[in-house]
Amino acid sequence: MKTRIYKISEDISEGEYDYIKEAADVIRKGGLVAFPTETVYGLGGNALNPESSKLIYGAKGRPSDNPLIVHISDFNEIYQLVRELPDIAGILAEKFWPGPLTMILKKSGIVPYETTGGLDTVAVRLPDNPVALALIKEAGVPIAAPSANRSGKPSPTTAQHVYEDLSGNIDIILDGGSVQIGIESTIIDLTGNVPAILRPGYINQNMLDSILGDVVRDPAIDNKVEGDIKPKAPGMMYRHYAPEGELTIVEGDISAVTDKINELIRLYDENTVGVITTTENRRRYNYGTVVCIGSRNDEITIAHNLYAVLRDMDKCKIKHIFIEGFSNEGLGDAIMNRIIKAAGHRILKV
Ligand code: TXA
Ligand code: MG
Image 1 (cartoon, protein in one colour):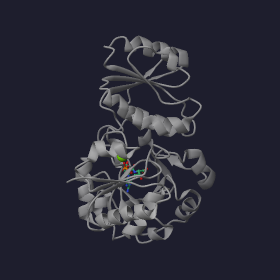
Image 2 (image 1 turned 120 degrees about the horizontal axis):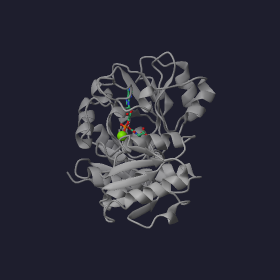
Image 3 (image 1 turned 60 degrees about the horizontal axis):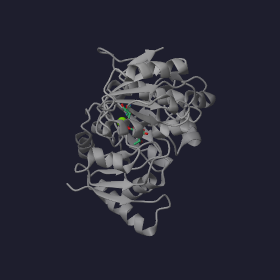
Image 4 (image 1 turned 90 degrees about the vertical axis):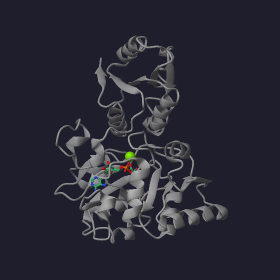
């Protein structure tokens, strides 16, 4: 299959809208379309068609017990997807939708188990991106979309990333440029007695607490999941967001961190070792491939650049990558969560 790529600007000109129509038609006929959202690019298919969901798993090389997020373009589209809608879902939607929040709810009969990985619950999100919203609206069906990367790789934040991973396996890529946020949506489970965060994201615990009172944090977020314990978000179980090289986080007092990284990198051939650093520390390294992810004071930029930087390390064929640790405050929580997963929990405290 030849993958077609269409550039679309945020204000979607009349000519560009023809691409949306073509892509919507592909979705309705059971094909796959990658599209931008405000978090990362998604790989979309008709959420109500079990065959489309099977195609998504195939194209990503993803285990079929890892459920997909169902994207809608208007709040009213949620009613057909869920068996019951708790009041707090409406409150959260009012506050954060369209936006980077995914809600887990009890699914209705029309959502196939192929889409939910066999679960009786469904993940629903209303994204904040004009191209995504136009595509869903024009398709006339909710769109199931995981991140548009090969399973296990860093999520795509540009159409080029999608092309590298999935070209030849999907019909269309809608290229809306670089995404806004750069890490996946916050997932909140509303099916239990107390709302629970299953995956941290741009909408952080404080923002949710301030509206819902106490929100719990699923313990699987912070633990290495071993043995038979199944985390509530099955996706948290797999090695994730990972570059091909071996990533190690070095944490602690910043000058001890830079000293330690400088010591460690010299154990390797200069062509195979890399450092992911910050504007503040950039000049402290002069060995191997050194990439700056942004300033420590600017978490928005760090989140935005994280996956692209990990992919750049792969392009340079770096085998050993060292990254400085970041604070866990605010967006830092989601940033550290993704880095820890990418590092397979390899953390060095100095
Ligand atoms: O920002 C995002 O959420 C992006 C964009 C494309 O919307 N999508 C995304 O999808 O990150 P994906 O498939 O890469 O991650 C979905 C996560 C997985 O960890 C999955 O296990 C969890 O959501 N999930 C989906 N449905 C669930 C359910 N019914 N119960 C618990 N977890 C669920
Ligand atoms: Mg993903």
